[in-house]
Length: 284
Ligand code: ATP
Image (cartoon, rainbow, N blue to C red; front, top):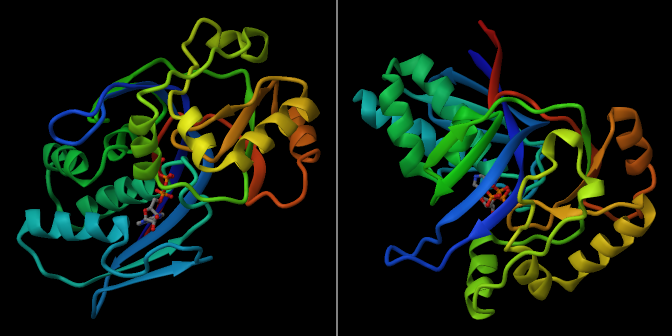
């Protein structure tokens, strides 16, 4: 049995280009893996099964992104040997934190160990399975471009923690991109430099998906404004939202900020940057 942690990500800025002929929008941004994580246990078994614990609106069957990864690896290996995946879901779903992609990348790695396919095959499958999966496979701090398939890992950054809040709404990534098209490609606004940790000053923190996300769910803008006031600093949206975050000097300050979050958030917690997209704590 293989146990593996799958880390969420936040976007430190996300620039978007016009929809391409293949339907995808080119993106350009910096992605950071964070300490909020799902856990997967993957093992050979009598029958195929995926069990999701802590539920949420995660598809339990063959549409789960972790399961799609298992099937892709099995196809590649030419095997039909049954597998059970137990997914403990801690990353808020449809929040712009890349949870499904993180599970997919971790399942690819676990299945690679079980079925013995090459690193090149895993990299190829990650590109086929979803736009954020190549980043989740690499993890850490990286510049991501194309439709997400170009990942350039950067030196790890640190000296900060994040206060992370998911307002009580869900946003579908494709709906937010469609709204961005309808709004004729708005650009994200500048972020107050004083709110950024020293290691990240000078980075482009504009998130072009903020305006369409707020147009679809104005509550997200209300949460952002309230958190800005309570925390006394700029608050940014990750990816296609609705998750919001701000920087703290350390986990202690981030905890104080999280303790001051209005009631009703879907998630409020401290997140720290991690240098990897997945971690295998145990093989038994
Ligand atoms: P991203 O930031 O990569 O666009 P997200 O964080 O906004 O994604 P996810 O949590 O990955 O969103 O969920 C997106 C959709 O994927 C959900 O509607 C969910 O039904 C589906 N999904 C499939 N498998 C999973 C999984 N293992 N975990 C979460 N969602 C999953």
